[in-house]
Length: 343
Image (cartoon, rainbow, N blue to C red; front, side):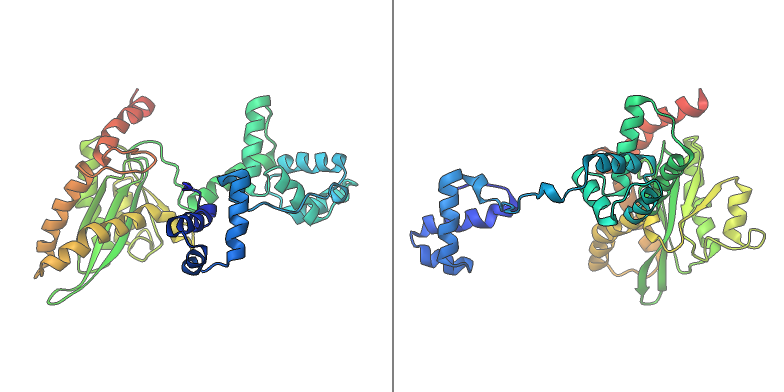
């Protein structure tokens, strides 16, 4: 009996084990949908080299004669760290100006061999070189590093230093209820600790967005003496003329910095989106099957009870929580905030 957790060869080992268990190669091949030739090829490989021999081997051997000259390869690698933001075509064109002729595909082949094919990989290699040799970055290299940070934010990789450093707010459409109408949820999640607040409304307006902050969020963070900056999407309930928009006026009056997501990049607010998936799976889909609600206030009571469990009892696997509850993460993170801003 062959045991393995390797997905690539699991079906191959399964065929051999099934044939051994049934004692009939033809029947095992019929069940698995494979030919007997395939079975005997797998069996010969397993008998000769064990489980590892079942891995697909690349039969192509590299043709060294087709590779670029080592001197050219060295120049391409140096340029990859010199200008990490340049793609293969730009690199080929720029090197041609310097008298080094290599095609864009040739540049990519070199990058692939040295693990530099992605922009992030080239930046990582540059960072390692700077750490080892103490080099001073050029303006283009600094710009590439800053572009990487912007891309990380656009992909949902939010840089958050401590609780209250950045809060994420979004609107979630709960559904249409008989006798109530449409119900919307204003959501606020601390991007560091993942402590969440939510309040239900029957409209989606700047007033409701500001009311949620005034009723739940600001009192909570004032109690813990934490700073506050808020990230929202570009919905009409969050964005407008500062002198006429209720939400913008509220932010200005309370001296809260307002950051907006990148255009056409909803994943920037991915922390709220992930919380919405959690609350849908663990609260709404369960609660709405058990009970019929006649008012928003009635649903809000059950939502508040669930949020207490979410914040204080449910462990979170985020990179800051690491198995702790959101409230535990917030309390532990307050020490970081005090070191940076209080002391």
